[in-house]
Length: 112
Length: 116
Image (tube, rainbow over all chains, first blue to last red; front, side, top):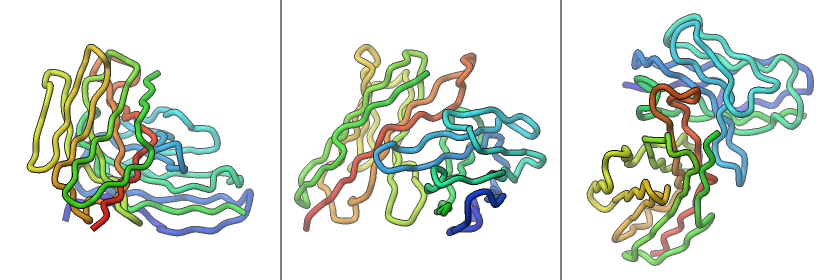
């Protein structure tokens, strides 16, 4: 089944404790991205990747890191999480930039 | 960069009525306009999209219209059903050549409730 898989689905952590949210797609898509969803703000892009080893900042990159060592994986790293990073996070992949985005199920992160 | 405004933020209709959600965008370089439906506890899912060389597109009860001159596009749902209740997002994406090529900029979302 074609899908984007995120893990974990739910995470509660403490301020400053490094964490990684994994994202994997099995559709051989070139373009991958991370979004955060906050009430009243829609989805805002954090980082994106046009292909392996090619990543760039989105609209809200502060406090986040990403890497794209393999085509299928695009992890999101929070080196030192803070409470303002409490949000619902989505990973998405597209065949190419500017085409349909397929979203994962989301990761609800709470930083206390 | 691109800015997408979506209205209304909430929409309540009776089953069988039509629902219309409107979006405006700011950058004339945008050329791809998808609409996503997000059900509770799930990720957004594409329901229909349109490219800038087309003015209207239909898929059963769903249609999207695009006015490039005015820089706005709309989602129309006819004969609404309770299972249409969800959050709907519009988005705009730029074509190749721009610094934001392929980036999706989303509207704020519309909570649609269809009452039986």
